[in-house]
Amino acid sequence: MTGNHRDTSISRRRALAVTGGTVAAGGLVVAGYRSAFADEATTTATVTADATASGSSGTCVLMSSVTEGPYYLDNALVRKDITEGKAGVPLTLRITVQDTTESCAPVAGAAVEIWHCDAWGYYSGYTTANPGGSAPAESEDGSTADDDTYLRGYQIADANGVVKFETIFPGWYTPRTCHIHLKVHTGGQKEDGTYEGGTVNHTGQLFFPDDAAEGIFALEPYSKHSGSYTTLAEDMVYDGGGASSGLLTLKPVHKKDVSKGYKGFITLGIDPEAENTGAGSGGGGGGTPPSGEPPTDTPTDSASPSPSASS
Image (cartoon, rainbow, N blue to C red; front, side, top):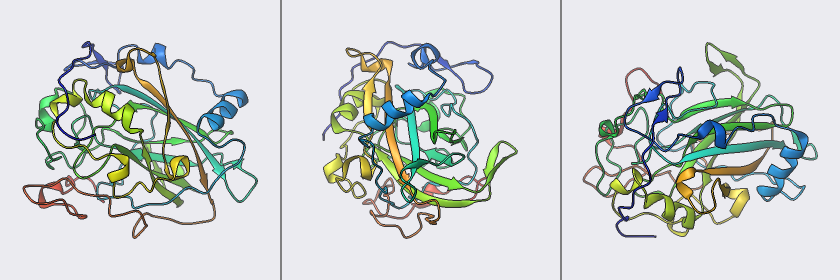
């Protein structure tokens, strides 16, 4: 999909902020989040259904590792809801972590860390970076989000190797397709609200079918970011390998109204004995939003992390 996005609006609703259950200013389509995704308990039957939905069919495949990209910050919190009131279409992720060396056994206790941009292409910690095309300033979205932590978080896998996140459908930035970054850690522990120690066993990215992204980006607030969107086939990181390369299986919450949100499923096959930090991994450099210059594979001066966070 290329060209300008259409200016079609979804119904405006108040969003639940991640802390304290307060109502965030700016209005967001996250109303109904709790009811739409109320199935908190993960049973063996659910795990089996998730594995089938993600294309595993009873077998597990070692996932493709790729670069962590230029926007990683070592400050994510352990929490399920990472939205912090950011505007966007609700997305619930169910990720199942399996051990490819032990007959697809679940990796209980694995810490899955994710981070992604907001509806206009901005990352927390890098809120002045130009996402390409034409977009309002990140500060204009009216949210109460913390500029260092929004849309970043950890979850610890249960006995079935499952984690669940509540977030929003990511936006896009030049020259990348729509995606979510992730790392899988083992051997560490939760400490002071974050995850400390251990080993990074997998660094990867999750991707979205082009048709789903096209439908979402026609809606507000996404439609306020206009420009050329990079499809999966054009992306510098996605290698066309489907689920084993991070392509999510998506299910709309409401078949006729995508603004109600999506559920995304994937099974991550990892080697718990391996170490992969993402530095120097394959799959391209991850891309960086331009700042008046052609896109590069390293951060621009405007895309430096906040002083309070390390990269």
